[in-house]
Length: 171
Image (cartoon, rainbow, N blue to C red):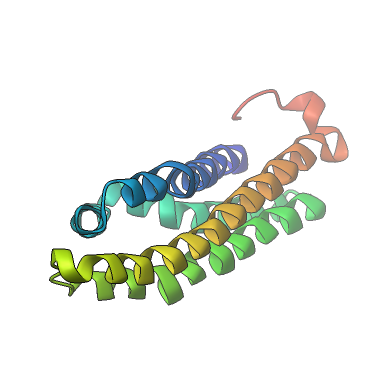
C-alpha cells in the first residue's frame, strides 16, 4: 500500500509543481501582455474557478499523501525513506500551502474586491502581479523540491533492505 501512496504522492507533487510553474512562466507573463484591465478580470475569473475538487485534491494531496508514504516507509523499517517523504510534506506545507494561504490567497481576495477601470487598472495590476508572481516562483521551487525529495524517498524505499529486488511495481 505504501507504494501506491508514493505513486499518488509523486503525481500530486508533480501536478502541483506543474501548475505553479505554468503560472510563473506562461499565465502571468501572458496576462501582463494582455493589458491591465483584461488581466484583472481574467485573474478574478481564474481565482473563482480554481476553487474546485480536482485542484483541491492535488493541492492537499501533495501534503497528505507524502505523509502517508512516510508512515508506510517507517512502518516497513525504511527510516531514510520515511524522513525524505516527511521532508517532502514539510516543504509542501511551508513553501506551497503556507505561502499560498499567507500571501497569494490574500492578494487574490484583495483583487476580487477591485472594480477596476481603464484609469486605475495599471496601478492595481502592478501592485498585484509583481508580488503575486514573485511568491508564485517560491511556490514553484518549493513544489519542485517536494517532488524531488519524494522521488528520492521512493527510490530509497525501493532499495532499502533489498526491497528493490522484491518490488517491481505497486504491490
